[in-house]
Length: 142
Image (cartoon, rainbow, N blue to C red; front, top):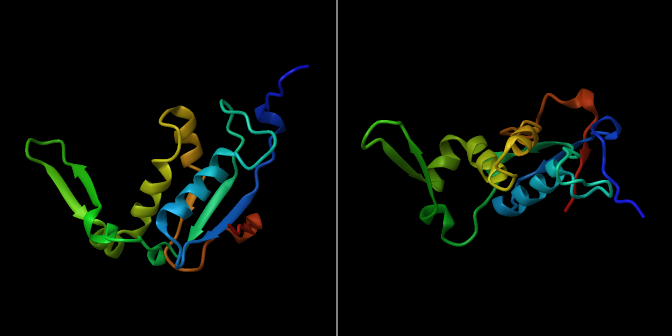
């Protein structure tokens, strides 16, 4: 008996749309990461990019449960001494909701070349419209 290994040439990529409106950010991010990695497919192979493209719409309407909106912090560093900046998620979701969703999803992908390639297949948009109608994306319900 042989173990099946997917080859990049035989993988069929699909497009899925996830609506983040009224859903917790973490639940949306885990489902998006699962689709990007390809873990929903029977041909999943850990070292091959078997995942699909994911479009997340209504990023500004994603919610954080509990006290996370004020307690959870987003950090960035300018590279200079004393250049650490912090922002709570209430301000981040008001200013850059796309960044908050992308950061949540990309943190759940592998931190290597494969994860970076899978992260490029994520498209996040504020509002309900996206420019990927030509790819005929399917709505993903979870």
